[in-house]
Length: 442
Image (cartoon, rainbow, N blue to C red):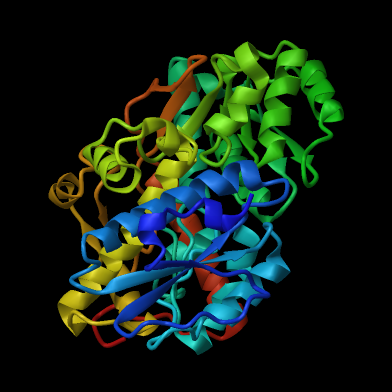
């Protein structure tokens, strides 16, 4: 699938797609460069393409409306194939592009994020790993240049366990239950494990760890173990083709879908559709809306697609990961807008955008003005808290669409935040970092 077929003609003057091997584009005066690390090819493309389309559509809409306070955004895609080394190459290629350098990097990979953290200290380019990456980066006193709002894998894990406890009639009823974690055998997939282990000790459930190697097409042995061990619940941290295969294999061993919960990277349309009717009842975590019923979607449909729903549908319009791409682009552009309030309506440096990320206060009123009322939760970032520990909701596939089956669930802050602070402190000691005081002096 070629990137030029995925970017709207109306936005071609403002949106450029670049491969890591391509020559550097020519930047127009007065533009800001926003890199977008994508994977439209390979085993993870079923998930990477919708996300990339959501980002590019939102930036195209912003530019069609005149940009951010008159400043156009040049979105530059760099294909990583979900490979960490290629992602680092993309970063090195694009960090200094444009008149003021890259605004903020969104790696869309935990592995890439890990590799970029220390580079950003030197380059002064912020990284926003939205709902992924190194969870300890939630402590902004140590991780000045890395942000992971609105919530993290550790927070998500605690919210999922709260949901399971509620389904079992109370957290006390988790004692003696079996909960399996089927996870991508990578830094991403392993990220939730420490939290799940601590919660297992706290609430007395038996935790069954089941890693799945890249890319996840061979899982028969995993699901035979599940059939033998009979866990009461299965939680999955998967990605790409792994999710499709897991749902099919769960159906093959007759595992009850309504007790199978994917994390927020394991619960989009491309994960369930290949399994057909067998996927009905499957659940997943989310931190934003599914579908295209918001005013912003109507604006995108009218402005970019001329009201052609079929054309928009070909670009994954309204799918879960398309919507997540929108959320990511909203966070980036609103952080830039926040920074302009301090530094002026002009192209900004990464260092200035970092200030905008750390001072982002995305209110319910602002979300409504953007056409996203009740689509996601308000976000207020601080120096100390680069995550904000936003709430999580559980959605369920009814065979044709995602429907919510829970209210917003607040993570267990009393469990997660101390873990974050301990992990951040250990990292600071290892790297010789003096944590910031967050008193305005640093």
